[in-house]
Length: 313
Image (cartoon, rainbow, N blue to C red; front, side, top):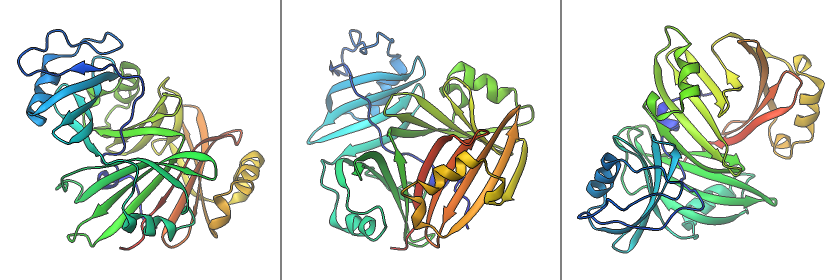
């Protein structure tokens, strides 16, 4: 069983924010540009977009994290791009490719039990990342009348050609930042309180309700937080990573029994954790190439879940 807290499996993903302002992007005059929420656009951000997209003519931009991270939608020649950028660099850059997912990818998804859904808003990175040794893709996916973000990476010959596939319920976008100061002040404070822990990177998820969650990778483990700072998951406190179902709350076991994904996995691996007074559980259901994670609070209520697969190409 593999660990999925690696940087190579977390880099970059789908980008979508609604209600963006429509703006004219000019390399000669940008002083009048303002996003919809009146968050001032720093000149450094505009310079990054000018450099990355020197032939762009129009831009729509909005703040993801006020004064820290922005989402930009722009046109260059025949292509439209969706970009996440901070004050220093582009964090993600996807080309919007319509709704039609290439047949080869659809065949891979259809070989899994999640196949047969409806696709929209397909997007792809144009460059092969030397950091992740992969190219990254995502699409909005409707399956069994529920909305998901389906994202995947196609790895190169260095590690053997393969897919890493993630399916997140009720999620609009995900991006990665390697910089602590891209996160809001309250999340930074919680991280800085972990004395002796070095910040590595954070995955940021924006739900369909526009609320954010943060998966923080530190030198000694992982911390997952809601935007208000409340805890979802932690490997940094007291941790038991091999417990049976009998040690889970009854409410959690009922949720697993009634979950339509769970019936596809014959194997169970349980975890219990306690950190700063918060007690929670995580169940991993799995077979040889697919995994399903469910997170619970101490009362057994589901607080997070996602699916992943890594079929060979």
